[in-house]
Image (cartoon, rainbow, N blue to C red; front, side, top):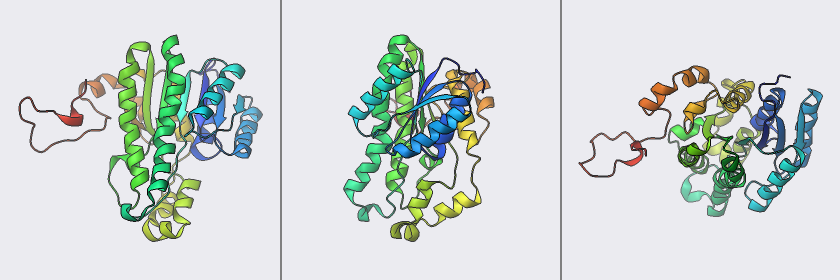
Length: 289
């Protein structure tokens, strides 16, 4: 245990397994009190038990990130048991379904957006008013390296993760005058339930068998995601609010070079056109207010 995050209160979604569980454990080990939430209560109990065994403080509040009523309850219980929320880590996500866009059921596609994108939106709506009022707080949105490039047969996942990059940028601009910071991160690649579920279905085996192979061949140390979140929660990277960081890269050096990052407008979602826009024409995503 350390006291680097002593006094902080965090909510971690998808906190019952994988990256979410490790991030929750890392935050608690650094001194934060943590609420973990997901739809599976038994997994949450395991996370809380592990945190408490290490001397940390945590509570489990089951909920569906796609439901605003559940978010309101998670926030209310967290504040009642742990205190005002200083950090939200939006980690919960779905990776299914796999296949060509024209074969994927639209309702299943929409469910991925509801969890991955609207889950982050609803979470932000639930915690940001308090953070803005207190003029302090941080939001970390777990995106993916998949957001940086197009790839076939994973459109719901890639589109949702790309949307999270822009969401973090916009949120950061909206709350920067209130002492609140927002980040999007790539946590790494692990042999996780998400990867296995994507490859244990008939569609997954047909269209994306490389997902499981990639996770097994190049699995990331899961503790890096926790380390990155602890670093961001500490405030040492607030100058990079709105930017995308990868837990697998040297994010501490990136924070030290924040002035250069801002000056060159790096670590953001952008389109680099071949032909410069005509005078007076909109400049797309490369233009930032």
